Amino acid sequence: MTMAPEELRPAGAPAEALVPRRRISIWIWVLAGFALLSLVRVLTGAHEVDSAGTMREAVNAAVPIALAALAGLWSERAGVVNIGLEGMMILGTIGAGYFGYWYGPWAGVVGAMLFGMIGAALHALATVTFGVDHIVSGVAINIIAIGAAAFLADTFFSGLQGGGPTQSPPLDEPLAITIPGISDAMNTLQDKHWFVVSDLASVVAAVTTSLSTLTVLAIVLIVGSALLLWRTAFGLRLRSCGESPMAAETLGINVYRYKFLAVLTSGAIAGIGGAFIVLVSSGIYQNGQTGGRGYIGLAAMIFGNWRPAGLVMGSVLFGYTDALQLRAGGEAVHALLIIVAVILLGVAVLQYRRGMRAAAITSLVIGIGFAVWFFTTDEVPGDFTRMTPYVTTILVLGLAAQRLRMPAADGVRYRRGQAG
Image (cartoon, rainbow, N blue to C red; front, side, top):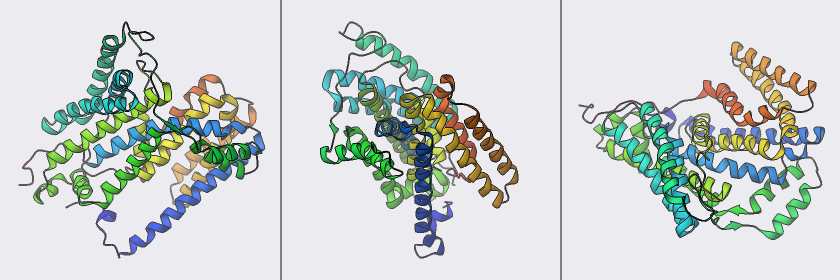
């Protein structure tokens, strides 16, 4: 079976000893980035950069992106490219709107899963059974979902009080959790504006104040998926279908079944992402409210190198920039410019030390450009502020592209019996 060397290496092999060191390295980088954010906040006085409110909005913005990324992870680890994540999220929003209105928020979540799985079933049928190009099928799912959601919204909500042909009446939100003692103490501490301490307090306050139970469900899904896909025989079989389906077939694995199961799971998780947007972020269904989060989720998955921990980091990054432009506006985004400049300069140094001189020069030039922009202006224009999440997506993917490794057979057309 052809699989990634790190996935087949025995437990006692030398490479395994590097795993804890890599995890420590990741945490060092996270803490360094957090310290940089705190330093910029102190020097610029832009306290909304990481206030509890901004962090709370960042969590709410990151969850649907993380769910879309997780949905893509399930599908692509089994070898099926899922460009249709946006369409499955759209179907999830209309399912959440209808079932959430008539039967309550958790019925809305189940309805969103079912509607997302309908889109996933079409995608699996086209790609796995009929061998349609995965990109073509995914784009078709996105187009179909837009039209289907608009038609169903008109059918479901026209004539209802507070509803209309493009939106539902207001919907009930799932239970939100607040831990009074911790929440109040952390909010008080963040108002002190102390270096690092207040910033950490902001993060704790954000996750202990009005935390939706859907957010908790998302965390459980991410952790559970990581354990299931990387710590069980089932997960190994599913990932083998994305690495070498022909080798998996010779070992008696029903590749079609695993691909179908992975894509259907992908649709269900994407549907939950749509439900989060409707029930938590908005409290109402509206046509077109996904706002491209399915595509950003796909970018977060790629940035995360098709791994759960990586996609979480990518989702938090994109969610944070989205929340920053929505809540804090141009002043906070202006402070973000110097953070980006420092990061790019650090990346340029690392690239130069690794012999990647062309990439290092590119990072250096872009970093200097951001620094000049910061020191020569006082505020970022509103139009660019609204572009922040999408510019971040392009910039991060451009920097991360050289270290990515997708599943070997991702998007490859497979027919039963090829192994013979």
